[in-house]
Image (cartoon, rainbow, N blue to C red; front, top):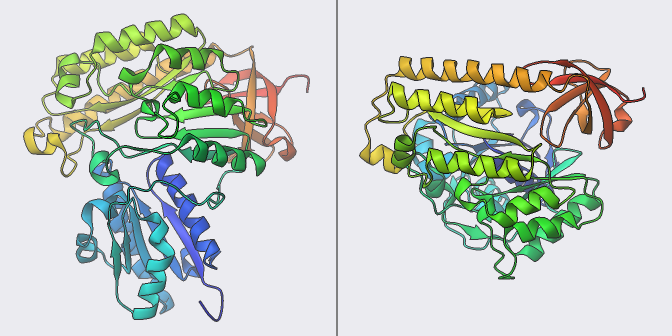
Length: 445
């Protein structure tokens, strides 16, 4: 590039893995000479990193492209536009026919490293560029990711997925399962800690299926032990595990390793064994509840969260009642709940009729969320009067005199304190409980 420095902005939809992919793309662009822009109006390059897990997330892309077109017309200046991520991989060239603004670059999930070259190509030639190729190499230049959070760092350990759950588009958008070498993961963890990060999030579609390609003895529990040994880390989290890959070694690692958080996000998707079979989840309601019992027997203070889909094809009122009863029995710390929507290429889209009416899906998710809200309030009220250890991750977004952090069980805690406490562990006495968080005061303050 010659002349003035070009400026970029990346907008991210979707999961933690998408957030980390955006951090990687930001680093690649900055190595190529770009600077971050605060707003779309100031950017020469706009990258939208997309999600296709739900239809609404997919539609959000095309709405946003229309808004970018309106900005371009108002300014009489059109930025280079790139679409990356799962929708890019899924839809490819079809994006250009649907978009309200010219899309210059389409970048698949396995092509992130090609972004600067593709942008340079389209700027130089004036022609659109696309890369949806499958790249088996999962290595990434060390130190490139521009961590957007001052306290925590995401580290991907697995790319892709081999499970093909009937509802899930991930194997079709992110490819088959590829493991990163343990040495590369540990080098990235050490680099993140060296840059001041105190919490590490290990990421993978089925994170606990990890097996190091460079060390046959290193399974996921072994990797946790190696990360736990890195000096300077305060906490380790991971997402998302699959219930059928929770081994005895993993339970022991969560119980015994001091920096591994006592919180497990354990997606169940439904409380009905019949629906779970249709989903191809490969576990039953009874197996899931037995696992919960074993986990809590080994780690009594373990907090559990989950994912739940309502209105999956064929889900009856009785099936939904089983979901509600499972939620009451397990008492999750939080739930990410979704109405089923048909995803392209999935087994469910090809074989199962989307036969639960939309109003009934809405009724069920409202009831599920109301039930879960009551559970969360009760769990948070049980914390009132207790002192909990909080890793402070940011100033509060609502009150300038407050900080926000999380317990090892992932409960959000707000409390008064100075900004210099961000990144520290602070003991907080809980004084108030709310559905999504608690409030307290620093112990001894």
